[in-house]
Length: 113
Length: 113
DNA sequence: ATTGTATTTCGTGAAAATACGAATAATTCT
DNA sequence: AGAATTATTCGTATTTTCACGAAATACAAT
Image (cartoon, rainbow over all chains, first blue to last red; front, side, top):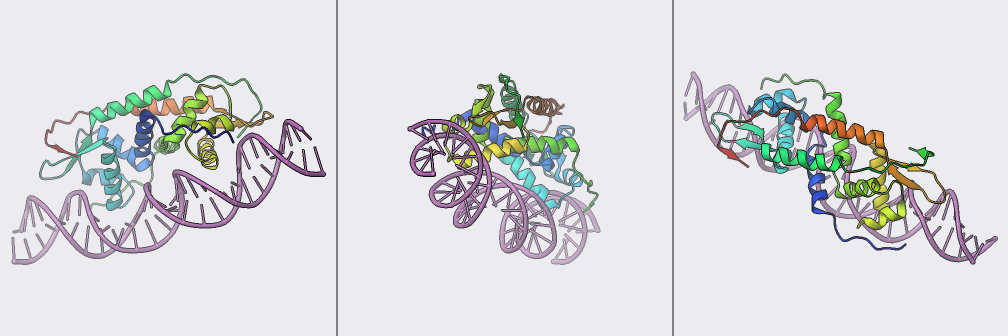
């Protein structure tokens, strides 16, 4: 085997993968949709929309925060969550770029699964 | 706790999450980029670009096939891989839609991580 | 001060992802 | 036929994800 591996992954690819991971669970997609429509939203309201235990929803929110897509405010009396808009736009831009890369068409016909 | 959970996740959210999962590893992003630029490409060439063991690359390819983004041809003498263009466009369209949802701006200032 | 409400953290368990090398199958070359 | 090449599958180990309920924390209301 002509083993001439490249050393590491590109920084942009790592970023895309990171965002993709944050989006890789339907509950997290649902949370983002909900937050997007709400300006700001307390945990309670989010949790009611998601068919999972509160503690699990909390974990998913933590994932989204880890990826930077969501922020939690300290506005009393409730903790409020909202989208991190700049990060959201950064993510959109990353995926926009990725999905608009030129894809060469194959000519072969015999394709299997 | 006012437990009025919705039953399930939306079909579209499930699809987005599924694609996102396929994209959630930098090796798989790198593989897709490589395939996009190559029209068609044997395993060998892909594997040389990815800093992981052959068997691991094979696994990542299997993930991409599972998500439908990649196909393997049976063109001798080598097995050739290429992007599934229709699926790729479907994915782009899904993400396009998702990322262009309207996001209400929050007014609160006091935000924590 | 006690109760209630809201949210997170902790502990746990089960399942899936990631990675590797060895073994295997299939094909090509000698 | 036998050897080399190509790619996948298998077996295994480690880590991470996902989910839950119970416990902990923090704050508001009584």
